[in-house]
Image 1 (cartoon, rainbow, N blue to C red):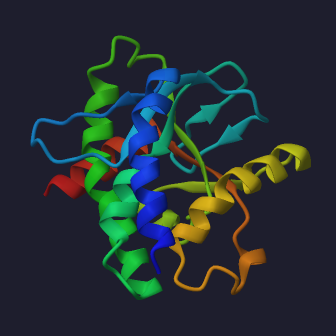
Image 2: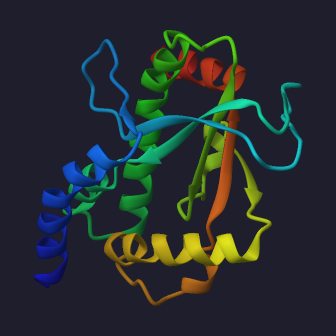
Amino acid sequence: MFVKPLFISLWTAIDPIYYSCTRLKYVHSDDEQRNIFRVRLMKYKGQPLQFTDGTELTRGDLLVKIHLHNVMLLKELSDKKSEIKKARAVYRLIEQSLPGLAQFISTHQKHEQIKGIMGITMLNRGAGSLGFVSANIQNKLFKWYKWGMLLPIHFLFSTHPWKRINKYAPVHLFMSKRTLMAQANRSNK
């Protein structure tokens, strides 16, 4: 079907404009490996959270908000036909990008204040084995808004986009800085 390649080409052309209009930054690492994350600093506005490593997250704490570089992800997955192969590829890309994200945080001028990372995604299966903790989005209006924003991405990624569409609800993914550093050390070995 020619719609996906056309949409990916269009998105590739528009992405630099989108990037220049946001506060997102690319994550670069020493090993010159492409990183799937684009990030920005943000203050946490949700309910207090406590991670299993003891890190407490309260309103106003500094986090790194992670965004998947969707154009890069779409290009990486374009030749994969199976949902399982796509899921493994996404998992591997995220796992390989965590050390670069850890390096970004450890060299950031506000690294002492940063408590962890946070993202919103529909791609949350297997996130726990990478060290992420998921939390449901409490605000129903915001949840529907994010679902609407992420739905086009779902249709481009999925081999069978209409199957089990109601299973793919957006969630918050969190990881403490301590867990990220430990995960990055494991990935580097």
